[in-house]
Length: 253
Image 1 (tube, rainbow, N blue to C red):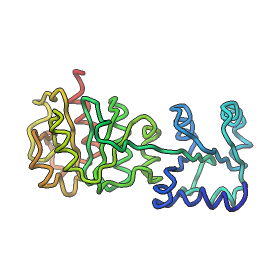
Image 2 (image 1 turned 90 degrees about the horizontal axis):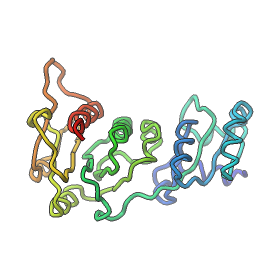
Image 3 (image 1 turned 45 degrees about the horizontal axis):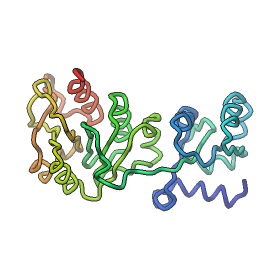
């Protein structure tokens, strides 16, 4: 693996190049193996020499799958990682998000508005995977899905869900409403989640905890729901709220 190729994969740490190449880096043993087991298209796996020397079992496992594996010296490997304590394994995966709204066909779709924190976005994706959600819509002001911090926070769940990157979330939601979906929006002023039965075809919205749902979103919402508050906390982290809400609304599914 020469320096030009190292620079190429290093460029995938940049959002612009990820978008141009439609590839992203997954770092860490768990993430890489999760991606391989999910049959996502893997272009290359890169080991640090130290990791290769101490993980012969993983090398043998991946080698049997006839995947391209490269081993780099530590100083070369560091150019590909954003973490200070990397395990020593990185893989480049190709991605293919849904590009047609009509391909969203699940009875329950999660939509996200203004979730700009990568850690929150990744944790929401992980929560959705836990509860069996198959499709997520990302509004235009959400964090980039393939940001390394988002990928790490998903703990591998990014490989199990289909994503639709909306360029205009409100317009796309209106189109889905015409196809029979009801929009259920989480909001501080909503009705208790303990008193709601989800419509047969639903889009469940989570928004930024700092700003809440936009006026444009509330104007097209069919139902507003909230998690009842019993203590003195001002707000609930949106990722935590997503877990509580999904657990309650899906308990009878």
